Each structure stands twice: as structure tokens, then as C-alpha cells.
Amino acid sequence: ILISSDKSTLYTAYVLLRSNNPPSGILVATLEGKENMKDYNLMIRKKYGVINTFSQLAWWPIYKFIDQRNDLILIDDLYGKLEYKNIEQLSLKLNIPILKLNSFRYGVKEGIDFINSFKPDFIVIHTPFWVSKKVRDLSSRKLVIGSHPGIVPHFRGSSSSFWNRYYGRKNCHGYSIFYVNSGVDSGPLIKQKIIPYSKDYSFIGNDYILLKMISEELINIVSGIANGNIPLGIEQKNLKPSQIYNGPTIFEYIIFMIIEFIRKYFPSFKMDQ
Image (cartoon, rainbow, N blue to C red):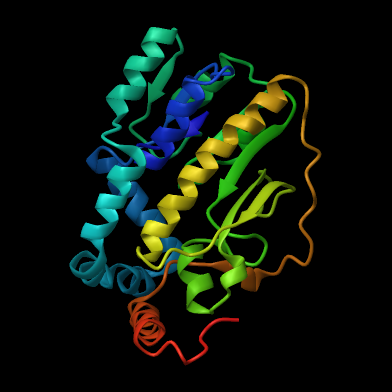
């Protein structure tokens, strides 16, 4: 299983370790280290441009002031005090190898060698970081299971809870689990579920609610595959570039907050489809 140091992905490793079908190994990508963080920031600036990157970060102080405290309480309710050391200790107890990279790239030599040592039948990915083709191809059956806190193909890429709420698509909030291919959240569907958006939390809090649901559903999917019941996967249709979203800019965030204000205090205005 490939995870990051975020609580939501640590939880996936935790529940799988405690399941009847624990992973053969755990690979953790991180943003630790100055050079690694510098490399990551450079990649982001190249991908989005300096102005867009700045604009996508500019709303963060507003979020911290308005919503972050409430979301942090939610995250504690969802995951408790789970930390990397808990995963490390449980892995050691179960004699399951775990490797923590000083890189956000799973495809570094250390990561490739670690995965190759298991010759895995299939790989589970639960991470915000991109997983390259050379890593995905290490599965002997070419089975790589990924997920997304959003309803594909309508909302793919980043911040799907934000965008479906922004556009009032209440039937497009939920999660999707699929086989990973070279596209953005575009692989054959294994499982999808629509979940009502919680008005008690921000779009970030809603993401964490969905991510926990994904973690718990992955137990069932992994159990099925381990017992020979491999999901066929349903090809996604009508894939369009316009369905792939980036993180919101400061201007989009402000519009979003205005829309949320209208929803809360002027419910007679129909904002949702």
C-alpha cells in the first residue's frame, strides 16, 4: 500500500493492518526535508504557474480564521490521535515492512526497490501524491486500486467537495474507488457512492469524511481481491478535460463563501441543482 503522512491515509494503513488481509508492505511518501519541499514547491509552480499558485494559497488564512478549528475537531473525531508511529509500531508487531521516504515521489530508487522486493499482485494507493507509471507497472497483475473523494467523471482532480458545492451539484458529492490508469481519476470504476454534503463542516472537513469512508470500503475490496474475487471495473464514459479541477483561487473561494452565506441565511434562493 502507498500512503502519505496525512491522517486520512495513515488510517487506511491502520485499518488494513488490522484486517484479515494486511498489506505485504507499506510505502510512505512525505514532504519532509528542505530539498524535498523545495522540489515539491517547484513542481507545483511549474504545473500551475506562479500567479495561480499564489492565488490558491491566498485563501488559506481566511479558512484558518473561519473554519479550521471546527475541521480539526472533526478530524480528531474521525481519526483520534493516530500518528505515523502508531502505524510503525503495528507494522513491527505484525512483521510487515514499512518504509518512510524523504520524498513525495514513490518512484525514487529506494521506493522502487522496496515495492519490487514484494513482487505484489496488486497495489493499493491512498495518497495525495501522483504515482508514476513505472510504479504502477510493478504490480504483477497490473492491478492498482486508487480512490477519489468526489463523484467521477463529473468532478476529478483537486477539491471536488469544493467544486460540487460551488456549482450546486448536490448529487455529485461522494466518493469513487477505481483502477488507476494514466489519466486523472479516470480509471474503471469499482465502487461509487453519493453522500450528502455536511453543512456542519467546510469543504475540507467534508473531504475528510469521504476519505474515511474510502478507507473502510477498501477493506472489503482488498478482501475480495485477496480471495480471488477481482472486480471487473466499469469504464468511465464521457470523459472531458473540463471535468478536471484545480484547487480554488482566492476569487473562487470568496464567491464560494458568498454562496454559502446565501444558502444559510436566504434558503428560499435555490442555489442547488
